[in-house]
Amino acid sequence: MSDAQTISSVLDRLILFRPGRGSLLAQATRAMEKGRPAQAAGLILSEAVRCGWEGNLWHCCLAQALAESENPFSLAWERRPAQRDSLWDIAAADMEVFSGLFAQQPPLPALGDFHHRGERPPKELAGRWVQTLAEALAAASGGEAMLEVLARHYETNGVGPLGLGQVFRLREEKSGVSLLPVEGRRPVLLSELVGYEGQKAQLLENTKAFLSGQRANNVLLYGDAGTGKSTSVQALAGEYAAQGLRLIELYKHQFGLIPQLLAQIKGRNYRFILFLDDLSFEENEVQYKHLKAVMEGGGEAAPENVLIYATSNRRHLIRETWSDRSDMEHQGDVHRSDTMEEKLSLAGRFGLQIYYPNPTYEEYHRIVQTLADRNRSLSDMAEDELWTAASTWQVRHGSRSGRTAQQFINDLLCRRSNTETEED
Image (cartoon, rainbow, N blue to C red):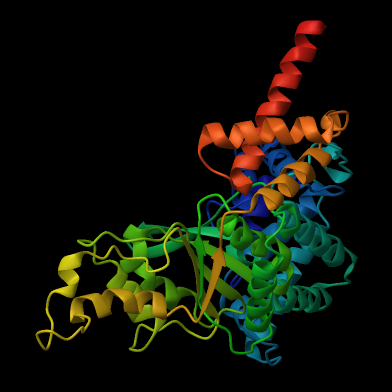
């Protein structure tokens, strides 16, 4: 490991698993080539803390390069177990190279047995997969055995950014589109959403059917603001990431890029939900036509591993005006115009439509009480005092919803914290 030139020359022997220039392994190797082992160690340490790695960090660095490598072998084994043919033999030769790299010492001795008990990292799931892979590869005897471990990893967890992330955003580039993992997001659980049990049950039933390869519907969650529609969808990513579910957030101006996105994710061994949050269109906006083409019919239709989940404050999504009703086929009869039918047909392409209404006063009370019970610092507050303050808050803010309840609890905690600070 002290001879960086040797490591670089070893990496040059790789055919399928050559690390990309921006990968951690490539960056650390370049730093060592320049005689900067401390810089290389710093790069690996930063990634270790960010991902939650422990133990031999050099092995984790190597395992990450293998987990992220999208090549003919890894993509073939992600889709389904492939035959042990010439491609397997080429991959096995590459793994003999990695077997030698696993035997090397890390750039600094401290990286050989690293332990850290800090805050939970945002990439916890990906970090756990990489560390598990690193330990299994290190325990394997030789390149052939290491390749068997790696093939099982691809079959179970997938490969590349899609294999290590849960939620993604779309970025347009000169060469096409790419998916960027959303890092640092706070994990959201369906159990955090108080109430709406019937709505959550419908959403879960549809999603589980989708994950198991059965027929499932595109979903529209509509209703009042702040009732947990977006939270319900976002929670699915964490709940079912280990089963291959991936969430891709799309903005309205990106709908024209959906065909390029579908071409990229079609055939991957994942189930994708295209998440369209707060979806609505004004009468002069036509992006909804791109969406209609993807949701039903034509060559742009979504493949079987893709569904669309959208949230909206209004059910029909596209603003309708009285002029839309003016082109009657027969004077004196009531016939909807072609313009209006085209607009309303978008909502009709969501086979499952789930309504999230504002909570009743009793439901709002239960939400506030549940949120308060989750905070020990509010345990001494009497129920009637809490309810009176919550009612005053929602009247002043003009809405009654789960979001309003959470904002009330946040304000209550803030004021209590300030009071305790002043007393100290």
